[in-house]
Amino acid sequence: MSERIRFHLDENVKSAVARELRRRLIDVTTTIEAGLLAQTDESQLAFICEQKR
Image: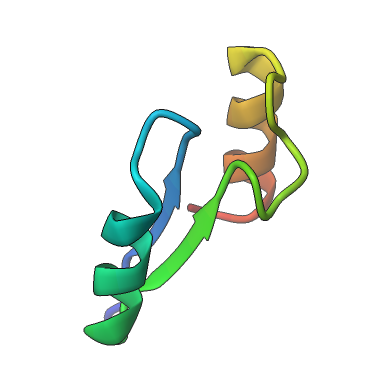
């Protein structure tokens, strides 16, 4: 059984990219939505590992 790919986009990626991925039914979170704006790379990595992204 294969798992779907889950992405996390950091604050440098335009919101249009997330919108278009979602339109194609791809599971995406963004730094802004996750409340991680201006957080360290380590914080971002901890989030994506916890979320299995």
